[in-house]
Length: 154
Image (cartoon, rainbow, N blue to C red; front, side, top):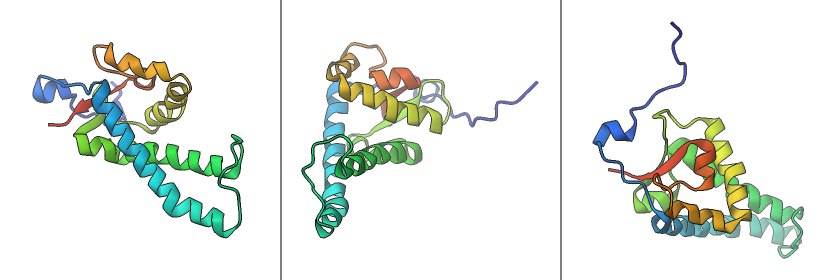
């Protein structure tokens, strides 16, 4: 018999018997706070460097240096916060946490897929965020892809 090398955590259903999945509005407000945090990081760290180097902050090209660096900030924030803490600052404020629906520890693969590919699809097709309101486990497309959901912490 082979052992599963991936660390298992107890699924939330077995811990408290009653999972409260985070709905659309809770996730929306947490996301807005995250956008404020990311915007602040960009304004404190990235914009001053661009100004000191006399580089444009207003180039609207997708491949402009400012666009690339702010995208890196955006994705790094979500990936690193979710991997190491299971939640972003916005989720912390509202007592929310990203969980693997199979009860496993969140893997790099699941997080990268959820935050990069899934979020890219969700941000390009805005209406896809609305599916959170209608699915039983309140999952966005990025959650469906990664087999995750966002729950209320206890």
